[in-house]
Length: 388
Image (cartoon, rainbow, N blue to C red):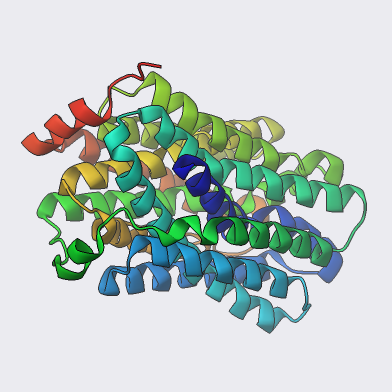
């Protein structure tokens, strides 16, 4: 039940709250005449909200279950509100507030799920939890695809996704009322200090945020640049989401005994290839490469990053996860701002090369980190193969 609950929560928080804008951007360009630069500013507004939400969570360290409950409510409300207006200024505000709620939800749900599932020592469950993001992205992508093929207004797609988010909120409200951390412990425990190793993880997670964000925001727009038929370019995001959903499950089952930090490092390298390919040569083939490499690693990196945070603290990792999420948000905030303007082909070259280089650097740092003794012990406990 906890696995399903967390997966649905992440599907709403990230698949809808964070990533629904990506497949709907081409439709908003067609229907409302949005420019690429305006789209970048809408994306940046969401990333800024994501950063603010992560920063607030880091400072105040709210109870994970409460953060999850109320953020899922606001994601539903704000997504519905996006479909009820066509004012650009209102979209900017709504995307910002949705970003705040998404950060709270990711931190709350991840911390809650990692604590609840740890005693079961079944790594496959983590894969299913974080696959929820991919399933949410598939839902958002298919909604955008259907709206494009049926020539429906983007408003209708936003309203449909908002209704789905509302269903998730209603379903999860009561179960999330239970906290895996006892009330007495939660009230008396001091915030966990972040070590030097923890801050190194924060930096590497920020590199990940900058590295993935350009393809994660503009892949459907890249496809639309080459193929104008929405029945064709509209498939990019569902495939991206499918790669994200499958990747976490496959990784959890096949690499359950491998240190999450090492899996994270290898994923950096694969993502770097996916980011670099369309930057050097934009074509249908490089879009496919980017979709598979970036879509197939970004949730693996999220999952293993959260697991590495828990192993680094040896306790409640919510504060370190919040710091990593804030760093990630800062990285993705800088990504769209790095686009210099001009044609789409010209604008992604330098940011893409820079992102790929940073991802390679992040991989080197992660490989070089020493694993603390308590982390090695916890890896042996938490990552046994399933006996089922």
